[in-house]
Length: 229
Image 1 (cartoon, rainbow, N blue to C red):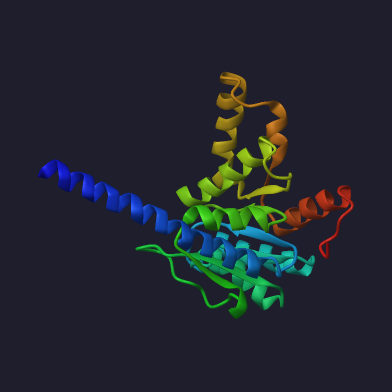
Image 2 (image 1 turned 180 degrees about the horizontal axis):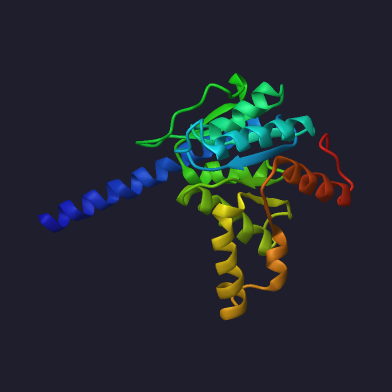
């Protein structure tokens, strides 16, 4: 009897998994339809816990403002902290402000600086991550936690393995990122040979909004493209 009940429960789980495919497809379709219309954008990542009086909140706002001045829109994860700062800078600068929200039990709620027609909600992290990569012309990565690191290393991996086209990955904040980059160089590269020297060419480390714009502009000038492509 217990064996039969176990098989019945397992079959129900498998059936639920199959039906979940339609919900996943729906998130992809909705994301593709809305984001295909936003034009060239740069994604800004960082901690949801960063307060408005923190130097990196203020810097993220400046970075976003400069990005829209340069002709790009801004995409964030839609929540508070650095994400809010990114949307705020874009909004106050009169540029496109996109938020890709994720339903979480803590931290996450959409911020008020997202364009009303560009505020998307996701249940699945992996669908949301596809949207960031597919519709971004660059990643600006401010200080953050595990989620920020996840987005950073996935983008590096996809570019390194030629699964997506190359785009600039810009780490903002030497005091935050320098230790990680030292470890990458000394351990991953020199110590164990787990990456190639050219892999480090994917990553830029800066401290100012002007440096961010310079890297974006130089990359797309070399590609023969401008922000209105």
